[in-house]
Every structure is written in structure tokens, then in C-alpha cells.
Length: 445
Ligand code: GLY
Ligand code: MN
Ligand code: MN
Image 1 (cartoon, rainbow, N blue to C red):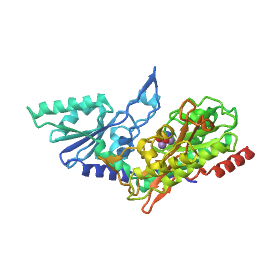
Image 2: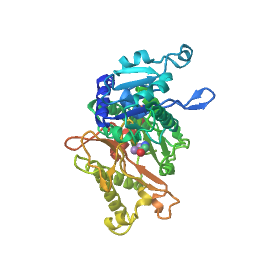
Image 3: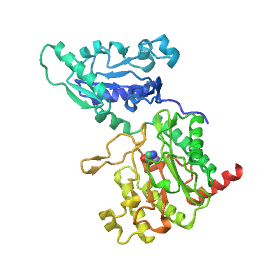
Image 4: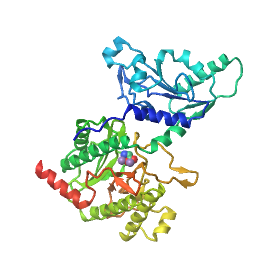
């Protein structure tokens, strides 16, 4: 299968045009790249570009600032980036450099980052609003304050206050709805992630350390062209599945237990997010199967609640109603679904909500509600559907037969014009299909 085409320069240009149209005519957007983060000595943590910056440039270097200036006759889209440095480039690899950057990225102009303090205040002279990410890079915010001060002194005396606005208000609405090009990349992230889950299922056996399954997943991601995991992979055997952010992945898989894997690849910046829960032995016990089928039914109800015009909360509510009805039928809860929902009495077992947006970030940007009103789903939005049930042994309400069981099923769902499309269908969800896949993979091993 051939790899999907990367996003075109034209698409990045269209995104910048959309931002330029959304800014106030006297506004200026100042968007910094992510910083390299020192781990120790001269070793850095793996670099991951800021998603907003990547969305508007496709540029993967640190130490850069994108400037968008609506209506500027001499050019609306400018970049400041690292100059060439022969010595550093021998260590870190080539830099694009300001001479090539404008043409390579389809921008109007590019300058060395070392000149930014000289150039930027004059670019702000006729501007009234500055859009920048607030609360994520304090040093950058201080630098912007310095440019504003410099601009004020150049304007010669007090001028109208330069209003600071969070750039997220403009950018994150645009990021929420995915283009056909983005969906191609998200489908690839989903395909690779589904394959990784299938392979990990084939490696499960009593006593096998959780990290062996994690390694199978990491191997599949990387050897399929993904950058790596979009978030730290969770491989929780037995009661470890009840720890939401379990990432030690170091315990042996328990005989007769379940294992929960929550793992997704990042492909050209875009995330997938899949969870499967399956029996270490390859066959669910009766108690495990009861709970699994319940979570499956809740997920089915939630997936079928995804359609344009539904609210973001509808799938969540659909899954909660099925889970609670099931817990009543299993004698875990008493009362009616409405009473239990209103009193929040199922929450110890349900723990988290059913969905979040998915895109360049695994918990992607975009408002979930406006005041008291939940957001309406629209074609092009992608969300996870991930109901779960958790019965930690320490919880007094946990029935003995379910003690230590934690289950979640998570898929990535696109809102289409008529309803939904599950992007992560490449890994089975039904209990019988999971059992069949595990038997087949073991026979093949
Ligand atoms: N993997 C993080 C989540 O499911 O939200
Ligand atoms: Mn998720
Ligand atoms: Mn997940």
C-alpha cells in the first residue's frame, strides 16, 4: 500500500488565508515554534513541533516565529527562522534557512531569527490587536511584551493599548474540522494503530511482560512510517487496567486475566487513539465476557449517536445509559437509569467521559460547549468513542466477581454528512472476533 501524500503547500496557504480572514484587520498573529527541551548535558527530549505552528507552516524546526499581518501590502505571511550554522548543522542536520524558507513554505518573506528584535516592533506599529498563544510559553510572552514596549516608544508616546488575544480562539476552530488531506493522514495513523493492536494481541500469554506488547506496538508504528506513539502507550494487565494513565508497562500478564492496551500512532503529525481489552488466555471468562459485552453495547450505542446535528454530549449520554442499565441488570446498582444518572452513582465504575476531539493532538483542540450548550457535531469533526468500566478491588462498591477488572473499548469516529465512519475498523471489537484473531495469530506464531 502506498503512503498517503503529505499535505500540499497549497493547503497550508489556504489555512493561513483562513486565519488572516479571521483576524481583526488591524491584528497581528505571532506564533512561536516549539522549543527544544534539554534532558541533560547536550541531550534533548525528542522534538515535537507545536501543533498550531505545524498547522500553519508544516515547518519542523524549533526557534522560529510565524507572523501573519492581514492587509500588509508588502506581504502578509512572514517567518523568522534559524540562520545557517555550519558547525551546528554538522551535529543536528541541515537547517532550511531564511533564504530558502519563503519559497519552500509558500510564505511572503523570511528573516533570520537573530533579527527579530529589530524587525518586529516596526511590523507592529500600525496594529491594535496581537494574537499569540497565552499560557504556554512564558518566555515568548515576555518577548512579545518587550516588542510592544519598543513599538510604543517608537510611536513616540502613549498609544492605544495593544490588546492581547489568545490565538487559540481563531486557530482551534479551524483545526476542529478536518480536510480531505488531513483525513488521509488520520486514516493512515488509524490503519497503522489497528495493525499494531492486532499484533500485540498475538503476543499476549501468561507471564509475558506488558512491555513486550508495548514493544510490538512501537515496532509496528515505526516500521510503518509513523513517528512513534501519539501518547505514551498503556499496557495494563489485570488490575493495572483500572489505573487510567498506567504507563509502567512492566508487570507480567496474569493467567486468566484481561489486558487493556490504549495506544495510537502519530503519522505526519496526526494522532490515532485506540483501546482494546482482551483476555490474556485468548478466551474471556464468563464474568469478563459479561462486562465486555456491556462495554461493547455502550460503545455501539455511542457510535450510532454520532451524526451531524447531534450534540457532543449525545454519544456520552447514550453510552452512560447503556452502561447503567447493564449494571442494574448485573445487580451492581439498584434504582432506575435516570435516578442513578442524576445522582452520579455509577461514576466510581465509569470514571471518565466517552469522547474527546482527535487530530494533531490526541486530545485535540476546539470548544466542547458554548456556555451551557453542548457543541453541535458537524461533518469533518473527528472524536473518540471510548466507554469504560473499572472495578478496582479497593473500591467498597466493587462486587467480588468483578474485582480487579478494568475494560475500555476506544475507536476514532469521523462525523460524515449522513452519520459516522469508524476510522479504526482494522482491529476487531466484538468479543468473538477478538478471540478468533488471538487464536489465529497464535497458530501462525
Ligand atoms: N489515550 C488517551 C485517551 O484515550 O484519552
Ligand atoms: Mn482517547
Ligand atoms: Mn486512548
